[in-house]
Length: 107
Image 1 (cartoon, rainbow, N blue to C red):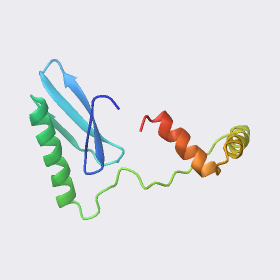
Image 2 (image 1 turned 45 degrees about the horizontal axis):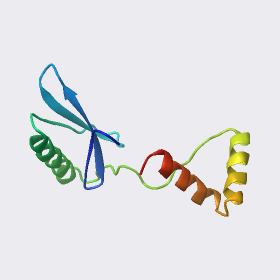
Image 3 (image 1 turned 90 degrees about the vertical axis):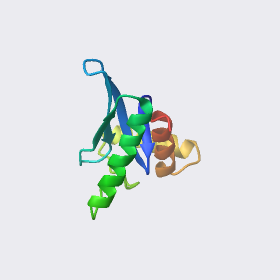
Image 4 (image 1 turned 90 degrees about the horizontal axis):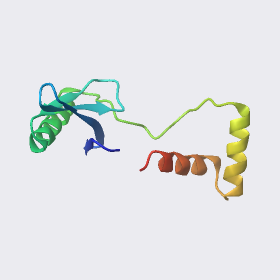
């Protein structure tokens, strides 16, 4: 992902606020709101790390970005087509879907 930073498994989207002349970041993938900012990339990175370390130290059960389990509801014809594509490639549906999602997410 462009304009992002990752630290301790948490990923944040970075934007530049032209009005205030500052970089602003927000952690993605969790319901809790974690934001940070900096006037330089180094300051932004330091504040991001501080925000994550603070979040982890003050929350007895901090949210994790993802568990690795994904439940989807899709139309039956899409399910059938995906199953056929998986079997055609010699993979289980789970293996096939993981590989397709990985490619789509540019990981």
